[in-house]
Amino acid sequence: MGHLNLISLLWIIFLFFYIKFISKKDEEIRNRFLKVQLLLVLLYNIGILFVFPWKLPVELSTSSYFVVPIIAIFNIKYLKAWGVYASVLTGFLYFIAMLSIGNTLYGDFPSYSVYTSLYNHGALLTYAYITLSTTRIYKSERIIIWLGIIFSAVWAILLRPINAFTGRVFIYEVLYGYAIKDYFPNNLIVAYIIYYILLVIALVLSANAVHLLNNKINKQNII
Image 1 (cartoon, rainbow, N blue to C red):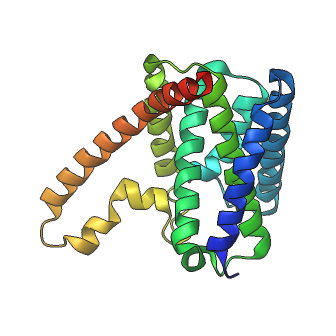
Image 2 (cartoon, helix red, strand yellow):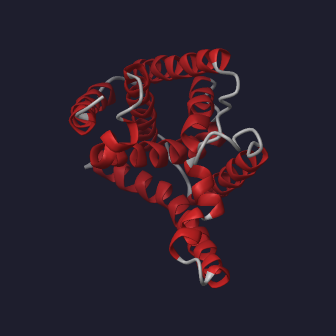
């Protein structure tokens, strides 16, 4: 497929107006919209798992296709902070990648895969924004996000033998710091120490971002 940056831009514009539209609805209708669109995400990815049972969700994004819908559909309040965090992080990174180097990353993917990924990540971002604008997320809930990050890392490591022959996977790129070997082959020990320190700092700061976004969006809505 070509012109993925343009397709992604058009989808982002649609999402902007769609989010504005459902944000004006009352709580019951708004929640119904979110649950239906996330149920579609869940059902589609369960179907994919039945067709390709070896494709166990290991990336944060593919795991979110299952976890976030369950959080929303069953209204698991104490996990909403994690649902928002996973949705914002994966959705934001995905659309940045699609807008900048989408053709390089996904140009050889089948059309159905590209379009369903656009829908899935758009649904996650919609859930994240609506939740941030209607739910109070406290600073203390960072612990839920930290535990979610740890669980995601452990889950990926446990599934590493299954994914050993599937090529490079983004979460393994991050966990094992493959770029260090490519760019600092002569200073591996020092480079790895610095890398993991910076990685932990980045993850801690990203967990704080959910609380800050929640405050900012709620203030804008009040104004």
